[in-house]
Every structure is written in C-alpha cells, then in structure tokens.
Length: 201
Image 1 (tube, one colour):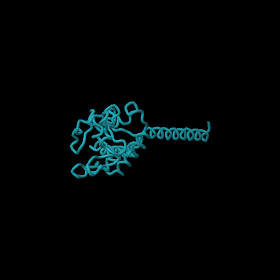
Image 2: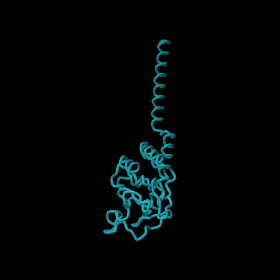
Image 3: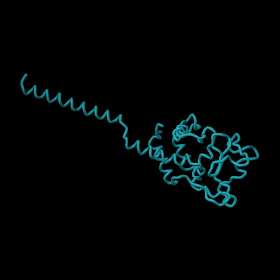
Image 4: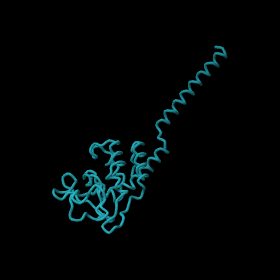
C-alpha cells in the first residue's frame, strides 16, 4: 500500500472519530438541563408561593370545615361551616353575608363566588412543596390541567381579591400578600410555562 493511500485512510479515520466525538457531546448536552432556566423557575415558584401561603389565601383553604378569618386567622365567627357545596350550611350560606364585592361600611369582604376551597385543596399547615404537589396533581385537583390552574390563579376574581381585600369592621385595611399582584401573576405564568417544576424539600 502506498504512503499516499495510507495517509488518506488515516485522515478518513480521524474525520470519523471527530464526527462521532461531536455527536456524543451533543447527546450528552441534550441530557443536561440548563441550570439557569431551572434557577429562574424556582425563583418564580418561591415568589408565587409567598402569596399562596399568605393568610389571604390560606384562610379560605383551611384544613377543617370552618373557614378562618382576620389577620390572626382565627376560626370564622358564628360557627360557620363549609357545607356540602363549600358555600355554607343550608339557610346560612356564605352569600348570606358576603356579596360580590367588599362592603367597606360593614367591613365584610366580598368577591364573586365567595366560598371555601374544597377540602381536597386544604393548604393550612402544609409546606409550599406539599401545596404545589397537591395543586398540580390531577388526582387531587379535580382533574385540572396546567392551563386550568393558570387561569384560576391569575384570572379568577376571588383569587385576585387578595390584593383588594378592603377594610375590616374597624375600618383598618386588611393586609395584602407580600408580593405585588403583578409580580405574583408574572411568577405563576413563568413557573407554569417552565413546566411547573416543583423543587425538592
């Protein structure tokens, strides 16, 4: 075999090796998640959960059959109970006192379809990881999709009431969640768009 032919063979083998090497690099990189994207998703998650775990939300997501109220999250006055449809007991339903908007004369808060979250959505006493797993699990969230959750959390008037809670019976403005409504909505959208990744404990 001539030296020229041997040189061509060596060059050909080297070219194949380089091609295979680049292919392996691409495959390996495809399996590695971008840590920046994951970090941003977790930041959005934490921002969202600052609102979700605030009393304005958890008061209506109690672990039992009685809603909570006030800045200290005491049990609802008058022995109010959830009832079969989460709207209170017959003849003593949420709509008896709560209207579609705040009553700043009496201090009674209000928003469309005021009522308790289903017991399956109880958040009281849970960690943000537990709440998120419960929220995004179709077996525990009523079969809701990511889009359903996104709509509820960013457009539902009852949810957004948390940023317009009105005043109490003494005329004192109720505390709002620690993040702005705009920041909360942006965080929910970013988190769900990124795959609704729930960090580990």
